Length: 410
Ligand SMILES: *Cc1c(COP(=O)(O)O)cnc(C)c1O
Image 1 (tube, protein in one colour):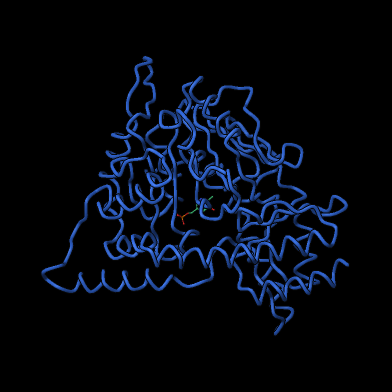
Image 2: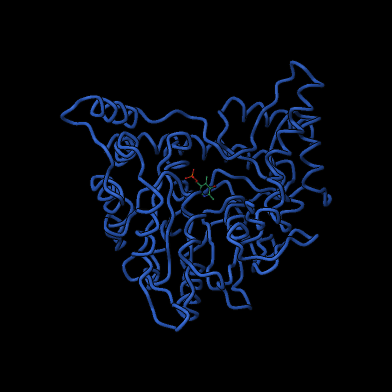
């Protein structure tokens, strides 16, 4: 008799985005012809940069020619890409990350989920609340949690509330955490961590022999000076942190798929006897067993974001999104909302007025302005009363949406 992994039954059935779709479809059906503006899901809208497309085509051509055809690639990813990443994202900014420590993959979603596999069952895992759902759900799938309680929290996960009161920066947990997921600039709140904040976490990890799993998917959106772009800007982080980066939001690769994970040589974790082991060989072993790499044309396209033109082109697109974020931020602030994020992030996180619940605000916007956003409560219990707008829509839609909300709220 085949048995299922019963931990999957503990998951709340992928509630957020399907529920949004359900409500949007129902509304569209009863209001045919109405133009609905979508600013909900965190997906990019602008096409790949010209340099990326050119390299992508070249990669495809090479695959069609016996002399340049490529089969399986190197397990960690092609040298040309790992070197370009090490130099441009790290070494040129005086951050000591070597190409040897970089693993190319087809996404940070899978990497942040899969990484759990190389760590033991008895780790206590800390996540922010609200949070990108992948960290919590993969912890549940791995059987490391109890059931989900009525208030939306899984047993045996340490939740770190991120609200207005702490400026959306989690406090160090009172309980000892072994694996800590951090994401800055944050999805969904748009908050960023200063050097001081990250130093506090790195020191905590050093002291407690914990490991920080740092998701830097939105690094490219940092516009303010002095905000760290990598956890490795903090002294000692190479001993306690894994860093995940993705080209999805940086360069519009959500449908093309390329990301990378940094596991420094010095990163170590204990076995049950207290002996220390390097983490990198475990990830190498995991990847070589279960993953056969990102396609050659995609890696070639990815490397093009580090060319001179590529850098300029992706910056232009990021600026476009950041300007969208600025427009949304300004509009809602002018209507008297408390607005967060949107400065170093494509996400605007706003507080509803008069303690309106996230889903009520969602319905109001959908029904009265035909705009779709994301209810904050969908990212975790502490997101209740908040709402997320994504700035990835095109400019025209953003401007029209802001006209509509002005009519609704002023
Ligand atoms: C979009 C996003 C990613 C990127 O995931 P990919 O699988 O690389 O597309 C990672 N982390 C967060 C928090 C995100 O929002």
